Image (tube, rainbow, N blue to C red; front, side):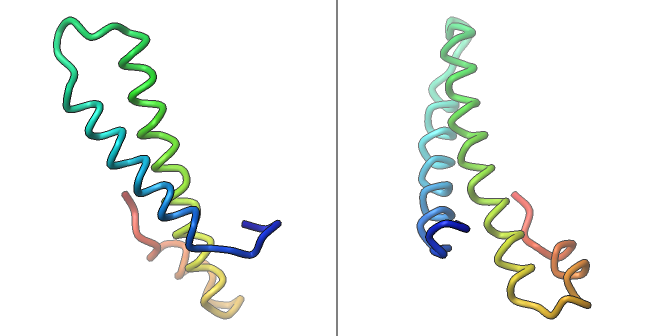
Length: 78
């Protein structure tokens, strides 16, 4: 985001990764390997990371410096 100045692509990508990861997690059963489980959780984690970090950064950039703490606390949580 710092290099390109673009906000929208990262939350959209993060949301897509969350949808895919949660879909993969919904296919698990007792026979799912540890590797597959870890890979599915990594996809969800990457999606959460893209989404939450950008939401916090967008909230901080939208307010004055004196209100930054309140904006960070009010940023949406996953």
